[in-house]
Length: 180
Image 1: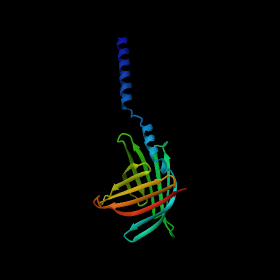
Image 2: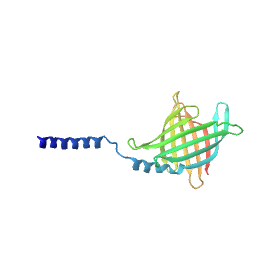
Image 3: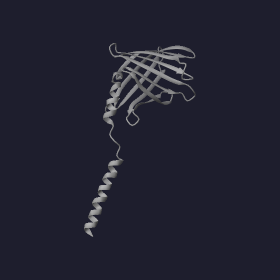
Image 4: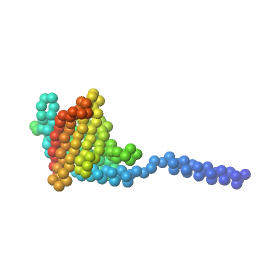
């Protein structure tokens, strides 16, 4: 009887180990780090101007972007702050987090702005040093941004476009930054 009980205990222990092993999530960290390195050219501090077109006209904003790695190079934190000349408050302040989702094999982009909104956006690499991100607007239309990095000149150019139908696009922001 003791022998039968001991055999059952060993079998049960083996089953529990197998179940526990199968329930653990796989470790995709190395894949994520490798994909995130494609965004390494963005890391650093940037400063320049952005021209923003609004219904009231075009406004020039002094823009900074602070970009750094988080979570052992698996997450990119992007904080942008814009201020109009002569104003004491930020006219623009956003924080975005970019990561690579290994299960979906794509980048994820989550942004937050000072007005209290957040956005789940797409993010893709168009070619080395050229990126696109954007999102659908809840009230209708789409927004897309194209970022081009020139590593030799250490510049970042970004243009933002809006479309009501996804076919015809209107530029509403043009930004040029230099890496500090």
